[in-house]
Image 1 (tube, helix red, strand yellow):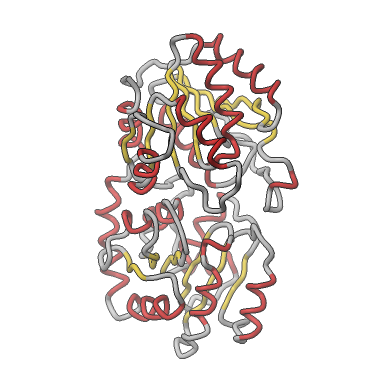
Image 2: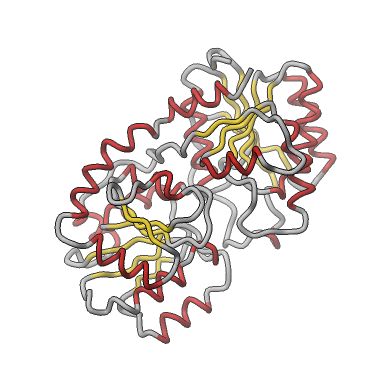
Length: 379
């Protein structure tokens, strides 16, 4: 289906909710709005507070003025799912695009979608970030099996996720295709390192290795901290951690104290609002993702936008985006391998060459290309 003069609904986080999913959905809505009527259907309650690991689910930024956002879905109230489903059944949008990133939302999304599809008009597709969640729970399989079979099509943001969808037990014959995560180009343009250092109160003579995003065990910050303890001879290098803890931070603080890394590691562990992101990526020399597991990563696409070479681990779909030796280095998720790659990437000329390569390589990560994939996922 060609997306021209269609009514398209995107279901998932959006303002007033904050985070990478909201940023993505709002950027996609802007792209689709160029030729279509677009509604962002987001949550009046996304998670119960006791299930949310961060400090706040809500943004302090003003609502985007150029987007239509319906704050209506309550993820845990079945009566709400029916009410909102009946509303959109009557509205008869041409396409509903769900963001699927964890099974917790299966009952809400599945009930809503089933009601809407009774109008015999609306097509239901999904952008799948994950099929198997990073932290497994007993509810995962039944909740996923309730939602996934209702789909008319899906776009997976990594080849690994596409394979997981194709092979998922009890889910058959869902047309799917792969499209990498588009560039996060909505954080503004890069500024000079000097300007970023002034804004963040950093020393411009130092070299910064950036770990960005919320902090959970699977993202391997502890691996990076253990690696930092082995590069004391690289006196100019600092590890910059920019993102909110989604778990107890005490284990990480203990590593810093045991290895006397207080001067080696800079911890900015509050939520980083969108208007601050450019300063962290402009100040850094390398972006590092020492993940234990992954499907794909929006952090990689921010790094591409700012032309920052990466060190990533050989897990999930991370390596699909970072060709080894061209736009970054790939290693195993252990401290010794991270140390080796850190030393390699800071050899003379490596960063400049990789940064230049990124300018060409990232051309395939466009939002219009993502829209074409979504069109192909519909009938």
